[in-house]
Image 1 (cartoon, rainbow, N blue to C red):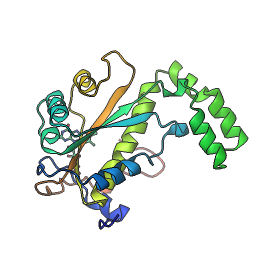
Image 2: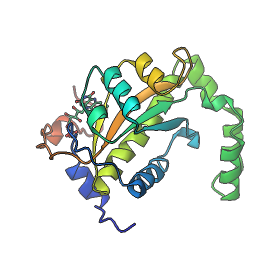
Image 3: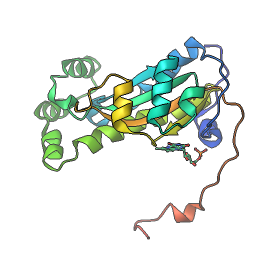
Length: 213
Ligand SMILES: Cc1cc2nc3c(=O)[nH]c(=O)nc-3n(C[C@H](O)[C@H](O)[C@H](O)COP(=O)(O)O)c2cc1C
């Protein structure tokens, strides 16, 4: 890939939510690289219980803009990535995950046995936390995408303002099916970079040993 890339630290410092885009299509090689980086995101137990639906068609992006209460980003940006969290992924055999980790020598017997038992997931189910767990994993992948996009010279916009039933409908998930929508990320070439809206001083967000409200 010949594109000039930014370091992770540069990407973190320069990424902005960009809400208006030029109509230029995404370079397919860049999109490919972006998606390759997205699936490198970690997930609890390496369950990879999240997926990304890439929507580039005008019809698909129009449906997503409508689902997002008319927000312009899905209409203007050439691609919208819909992050889907699958709270039921752990119930499958997931033999491919085990096979790869074993082949790579990444998991010891103890980790493998714990994965096999799915004890953590049974516990999360009892505590009603399966959806939250899968959404966390999907959000980490979305964060990877936003930073990778900046690193590759692309702009992005995360979106949480949408009607879940309509987003599901737009990407072909039945309304009552288990997969949940975590977040949408529009990706493309912005019309400009908005100013940094600022952050509170670090002392308001970072504490030592004890949380201070
Ligand atoms: C999970 C999440 C959901 C967001 N949803 C929306 C949204 O629906 N519409 C929107 O215009 N911006 C949305 N934003 C963008 C935030 O407003 C923006 O990140 C924040 O103002 C800080 O600006 P920055 O991203 O440029 O640092 C969202 C951001 C996050 C992290």
